[in-house]
Image (cartoon, rainbow over all chains, first blue to last red; front, side):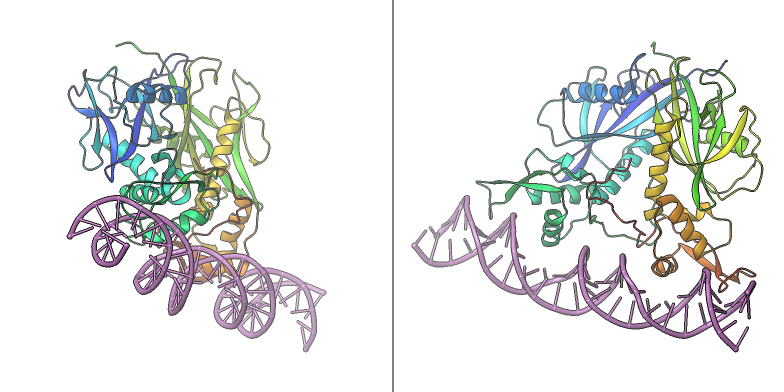
Length: 232
Length: 232
DNA sequence: GACTGTTATCGTCATAGTGACGAGAATGGA
DNA sequence: TCCATTCTCGTCACTATGACGATAACAGTC
């Protein structure tokens, strides 16, 4: 049986919340094509490697951490015939949500790597589209899953969790209602018994992520219009 | 730059509702490997073909219809190194939701094709997993999107729509509450003015699908447990 | 130490959505 | 005519929600 030959890559949409805003990890391309342009980190899948393993490997390489924590899931695949001038390349995009990393990012195969606020990037290949899909996935999953905790360190306050929603959605939930919903949704967060110290205002209780896979009831963002964009 | 060589296929999870139950379109394999076993329909992506175009082509081939209607979306990609004994094959799975087709299915590259009730299949490759993922995606999307109409013919009754939910979820919503929610969700269904005739019971009004992309408010299934399976 | 600003946490209240269910409407068949 | 069936509309108690007031518990300043 004969069939066309493809190359397969994984590309990563790595998101984090820094300084109250949603940021994405980008690399400046060090080789053709699109040399010098910003792009999503990624690379070819090895000969004997699973897709998820390739994504984890690339994530570790780009962040410089063996186990950066957070969350990693498959996003979607993109395979338009002309998306890569080198030939027929199908990419499997993964979405990673990480807490703000104080560690440096030492990319091995990129001239530079940097966190950039999510906005109107102009990236190489079809990475603008992939990034947009990843951001929309993240926005949507904050509603129905406890994934906001993936942006937080192991222990966090309800206010820190709220800033995640504010950064990802671009809209701030009411602090009092958010506190009620976050603490009442079973399995979302669990109290540690400790509290913050030395910060202005009343000390806040510290929580860690719970074990629920689904948020019930969900924490919904305001629907701007009746016919919003459909997920996936 | 050198990189490993892959083959890329598309596999289809084609679902429909027949006789009150959820059915999946399967083909009996006519060549090695897994000769004679049931599998999801699919095939190699052509040299100059987009992934979505390949999925549409395969769907048309398997159903024998140029435009079968319904709904088609990308599901996920699967690329474990040993998933295909012939070599390194990455498959991009697509999910199709179709109304019950009276037309025959004339598969070109399969010895036989058939609708089988979704249950405990034992399919070739990793198709059991792909099928399970597709069914879970369908179950989840019935809650938040008007995709149940993709299972229905152009004109349908609320009761027919309700049987879709019952078949996909395996649990029957209350007819009166479902009627209220289906008719009150903006853009879900639109009245045609016509009604059914000649069937037992009071005639039912006929509706067609609306233009909403999202169901607001959603139609939620009963959560069996607190920690249910997470979507995608 | 009292005061002030700040943030966290708890309560209240009107309103909308929900599940459970009753009841009438409109047909076909006995 | 009566009855079984199915569709359609209402009712009601309960829960979740958004909007907002009020109090708690700190750090800093005078």
